[in-house]
Image (cartoon, rainbow, N blue to C red; front, side, top):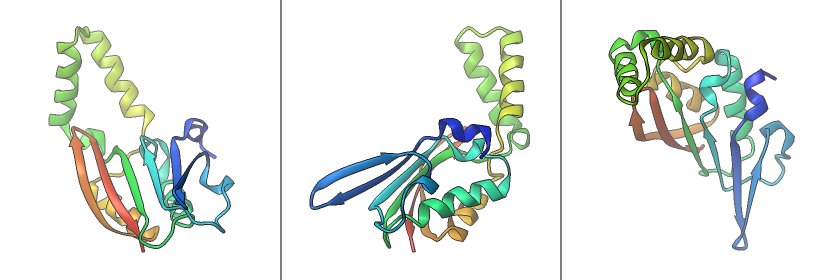
Length: 153
């Protein structure tokens, strides 16, 4: 498993007989014989290296969801270097909060080396579709971040 998975934030939620149960952990460590009512994957996908790792976790989540169950997915969804205007906005935000030019350069360098986001919102939709989800709808966006709800086919 990639190093990023050590701090995976993942949740499956079930509401059987109005008794809610939340489970946090790796999807592969959770049995798939009693599907869950919903799941979240927040701030994780862009830390998984490569398409295959992203596809694997979304597929593992989908395998543990009931038909039509929602998945909330949030994370970065652009190749950072392809969005110079957003990179400049990020730098300006830090500058406005007192960061020095050296601080800003260090932060930008860390971002460019520390994540592998899907290359676009369409790439996120393709990942969701291939993992068995349908009807993705973005409900939040800010600079590189986006959040979507999709439903298990």
